[in-house]
Each structure stands twice: as structure tokens, then as C-alpha cells.
Image (tube, rainbow, N blue to C red):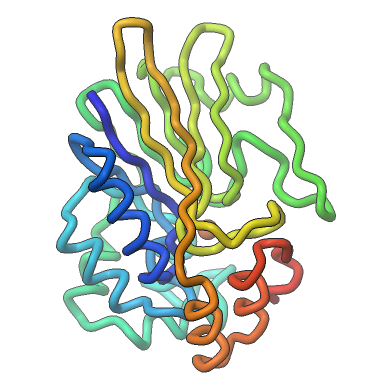
Length: 240
Ligand SMILES: [Fe+2]
């Protein structure tokens, strides 16, 4: 089994195109999505169109929830912008995404943690500019009761692959469309593969036309997102 994992596209159809082209070159059985699909200033509708055509299994992220229901706590201007771009069938697709899912009884999908789409799992989420790996016990506790060899999460936009002491693999593929605090504008995704020796992780970085993405973000009224799209050095404090 060989699958690609994409997460946190945040409406960046340009980054998604580059990642899907790279995935096609690698050859995979399917593409799994971890949410935060459309909420961003580049091209939310184009992103939804591509993901619906792709048809892969996807869970929803916190920003997908907030885009569907702008009255929820946490919803902001970027979610309202995304929602205004989507047509009714795209909004229906977004609203129907499950909170968690499983692929072939081997791979579990969630956005933040299995229990919550706003909680970071594999790293503390931006205490200032510091992200650190929590202790194994803390990470493992959030994986309790999940009998899958591979657990997937997103949300923090930080690519990481951890193996629990019991052998289970937890992978965050990073963000396709919104790079924060790790010093690169390149799009991120992962390929995971089951080989005789076990599950392997490949964390990939794909260059794309990030200058055009930044231009669109600024033109759509989100210059602070344009900064982050331009260089990937910017933290989430700059987005609010
Ligand atoms: Fe996100």
C-alpha cells in the first residue's frame, strides 16, 4: 500500500496543483486529505473543485467547520472570504466531510488529534516561535484505543513523523498551501508506504509559483498571508 497524504491546503490551488503533479510522478494508490481545505486567500473555489474531482478520502479541519458555519467561535475573515467564493455544491461537500476516517483498516485520519480538530498533537503549537515535540507519553495518550499501524494528523503545518514505543507511526505531512515558521515557501506533503520491513514515511517539499500565490492573496485583501506565502518564515501571529 502506497498513499499520498495532503493537509492544510488552505485554498491554495497553485500549491495543490504542484503537489498533485508530484504525486502523479511518484504513483500512489490513493490520496488522503486531513482538512483545512479551502480557508485561504488564493483560490478557495478552485481548490474545492480540484479536491472534489480527486475524490480521495478526506476529513474536515477546524477551518472547514468554521467556513461551513461562520457563527462558530474561531471563525474569522479568512473563513468568510472562502465561504463567499464557494458554490452550493462545494459548500455541501465541505459540510459533509467527517471529523475522522479510516483507510483500509490500516490508516487513521484526523485533523488535530483523534478527539479534537483544534488541538495540536505532535508539537506544541507556536509558543512564540518555539515548536517542541511533547513527551512520548503525552503523544501516545492521545492515540489510546486506536488500533491502526498508521495515524495521520495535520493542523500545525509542521511536517513530522514519529514512531510510538508500541510501533505505531504518527505522521503530520505539513501544509500544502500555507507555510508557517519553518523557513520555506515550498508546498509540503507526505507519501507513506507499507513495505515488508514496515511502514515508511517520505516527507516531501515541492517548489511552486509561491510569488503568484502571494500576489493573489494580496489582491484578494490579505497582505499578511502574502508575507507568509512569500517566504514561509512568518508565524501565525502575523495572520491575525
Ligand atoms: Fe491549518
